[in-house]
Length: 299
Image 1 (tube, rainbow, N blue to C red):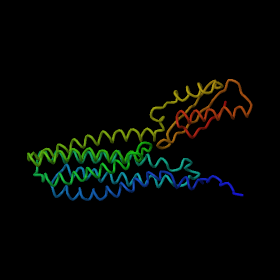
Image 2 (image 1 turned 90 degrees about the vertical axis):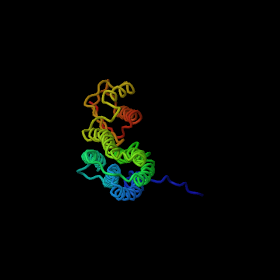
Image 3 (image 1 turned 45 degrees about the vertical axis):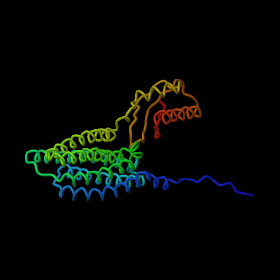
Image 4 (image 1 turned 180 degrees about the horizontal axis):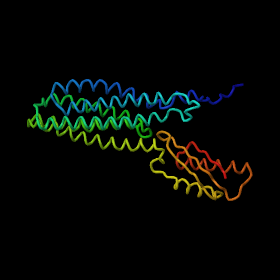
């Protein structure tokens, strides 16, 4: 007689080990590709005397640093929950995203200062060499963006690294075009002008990332969700609810939502019926709003 195989049990340790495992693999691969290209752009930027290329190399360095921070944040988030940090270390990912956005602002200031200096005192640019290095950087950025694209949809920390990569990609396109123009026209002022344009693009992406991470740290309701909307959905789905007070919904980390609320029922049912109502409330919260952590107190 054959014994039926029992379904494999996933322990808490295994679940912890698997946390963001896909993201970790993608981040490691992207770091390797970016690190090599970053070194090439740093050397090439100085050899060609191109501020735009140096700016892109500097921005690629911040991207590499962002990848490193994002990877480190996931490793920290994998640490076991302790009695003092009952939600674990998931928020480290959001702190990393916030730090990345501030780092982008610092790079922007440097690019703007250097760009103004180059406009006042333009220097000759090696257009052909600049084009070859920028084209190689563009290919690497496109590859890295493709690697991170899927993982960046649901993870703000990885999204921060992806935004760095996307900014690099756009700037590389601009530099490739600019290098062609410089090669044929000798208009060297295009180089610092491109650098300043890249700086403003970086500010836009950095500001959005700063707002998203700050909202999570301030325990705001997740984007596209508010407490009134959640309360209405619960009342419509569970007619036994008379009143909902002290409802709080917030995001612990990317796509990890929590809810607490005091609920008054129209008629206080027996314990088994109350349990059934609680399960219905949890089901609506999870199905409609992806809220997994729900704490309800019946008044």
